[in-house]
Image (tube, rainbow over all chains, first blue to last red; front, side, top):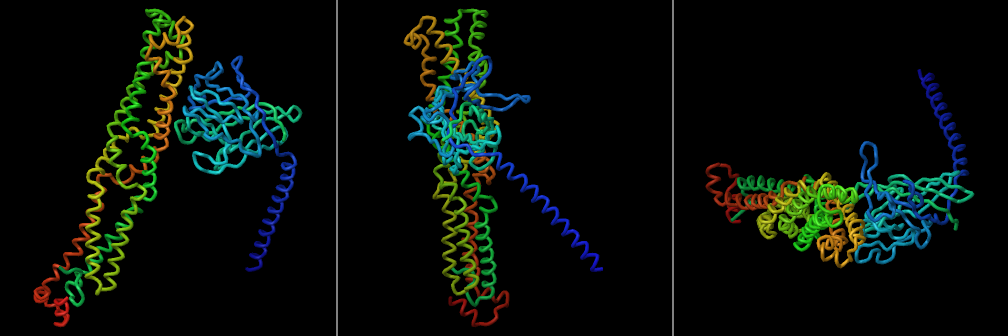
Length: 231
Length: 345
């Protein structure tokens, strides 16, 4: 009675060991190819100004998604937008030309003027949004949750960019709206996009849900376009 | 006055022991009440809601909100009336031209009356409950609320245990329990809970239709509509007036309501969006407090156990004050010595 049981046990253990060995081999084969194919991008994503023509937006722009009806996204219009379609708020590069990796691009102190206009101007220039200027910054500490955010990182795999920018924060009317990708707590997805290694042209997009405040439940759609400048 | 059956008096000793067990149960009940009602989780949420509403609940701020709504209403009426006439003339065809020329404002003009009614109603409700809010705010912080049960509860339970374990100490412990019981009875009086708690209950009832996710989303929609409409007024209609030959000062003189609205728009945004934000951020906090027992009952959560503790601390002593009569009636005294001891104590 004991021998067949021992044989069965030995056989099962052998099978398990073989399966583990096979999985490890697959993982080992897969990891280097992934690691070899991806590299970190260090530098600044220099932003091209947002444009709107022929019913199409390009460059750097933002849209506020309020929800969807019948599968179609609904947007909050910004009457002050320079675009014909007021759901697009066009951006212009800020003092540092765009979004930098490996460091935070915080706002000045104070972050807002007496009317609630945002003063952050490193990434983009403040733009009017329903009469009050809004801007963005990458913040180490999320003012909404007090969580610490990781610094901006970008990796390139072939022509595909993955941008992790959890500290990305929209600032408007004395208020902060984390627009991180992923969020500081790691939820949500990283921003993704395309990159041409020859021309260094990039297009990166992401959607980030607003949690808390007057726009709670809305989402920001970000479209960054321009040329990457390595450090 | 004697209590809890002093040593050596079997009849009152037994009654006192039962009373002590009852007091112990009350103490444990008090101490565990916050756990049962999840006060440690809900209390801080309530405190957060009270803190975040505070800037908006002053008469000046609430009057300001009402003024903003009146300002928007006056601006909409003026733009849809005299300004539309100034730009396109009178009559149905002129009206149609105006609406085609300024579609953003036309939509706003149609959407505004129900928004106006709803927002006025909302602000009236909030303003009518500002006094109730202030009454609740004057109570100790919700964060401390659980401890008002736990601390006396634990003290009562510990004293009851002490009295059970050390019968010689019962007379002095009895007085401590009486003092604690009186403290519990007087606490709601000291904090004016009988006046403030029912006001809190009225506020919670009034906010039941306001502090909902649905209402917040409605407000967000109103904000979007108002922002687009005002944008059309500021960026399309006023420039059209300027192109028609009117100077800025002439526009301000002829159309003061639109001028006031545009001039005060940033202040309106500065006030309105944080209020929507506070409402939105506190939907869950409101729900947490709403899940607590009704505010009106809270004073009684102190008074009833307080009275019970006092009664239990005092009544057995009265019962034991006539040991001989009881003993004779019951015929249960074990020794005359115990009776003498009890009578002498």
